[in-house]
Image (tube, rainbow, N blue to C red):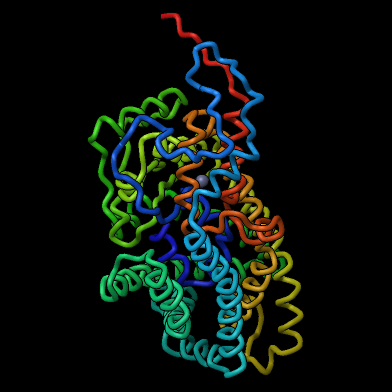
Length: 471
Ligand SMILES: [Zn+2]
């Protein structure tokens, strides 16, 4: 989800501590993508643009239920769906997605370079000296948190400034090049500032809490640090729909009964206590079709974006919304939070070893005294960035497996295999549709288009009998 990205991409420490999970939790809206220009009409018929080759609809609507499964070959049907995408479109989306692989590397290298620069140049140590000199505290304002804040704010400003060129290229220039962005520079820049302000605010609070832990528990800080990080993530996820998202977009209940009622019916059938479906004006920032689950505990909200409503048919919308409901029903928020805690505790345990070794070797040169010294923050970020970079395939796989569960739930709930296939092709406008298995393992935080369509076609081939409802 774009808003959270605006918040999270600004700060390495936030990304690191939140790992994939905060982003996953917040944008569990897996089915996010720019759409091809599809007819805006809402249509009940899912078979309007079915590909010709290899598909003999075995008739889900058949009252008898079991029909002729042999004539339907999921592999051939998947191929046929993929073949409906014109070659140039395929090449363009492949290029866009593969560019993302390199951006992953570049972002990592930039984070590393900034951290090394701050340490080697002595800027980090001087910033700490400055904080200690200026921020002496008073009777009502304790000295230690104040000094951490006096270090953190200039730190965020320096990192934000040095990281801006790559950020600008990745989130503005490139998005426009591929026709995915709708904002001109000024509104975009304004949102970057809002995101940056939030990052500074949230990041400073997080750092104050972490450094308090570092100071009190110099040996076991990695355990207590995990507790702080998880609590912080939980709070961020809970308050995001209420306080953060409204800063970037407007959420309003969908009033069109043709869209609202079928979605609410699915919610009701799955014990989701939803009375409203929300629409978000994502077209302010992007052309991507998306939906998401945001929030946690009492603030959970499922919303679909206006691009989805404009560009997709009802079967496609139902397929997407059923996927999002899957995240809710299968408790993915809590599960991802738990997985994150495991990743964080391992990451921080490793960080402790590496940090201590690095300070023993180069601490004097960098002017870093130990873990409780804010001058060591760039070193902390350097280590965490590296661990996070190495763990990319693992984190993606954890999220991808969760997304696959939501897909399975979604197809059973929406019962729209063709709708799922069609909307998957629309998502394919920014995700490589048919990657190699190794690419999918390393880079995909959602199943590939091919895998998703194959799942839908296998569901269709299984041709489950319908229940006869006797009132
Ligand atoms: Zn999802």
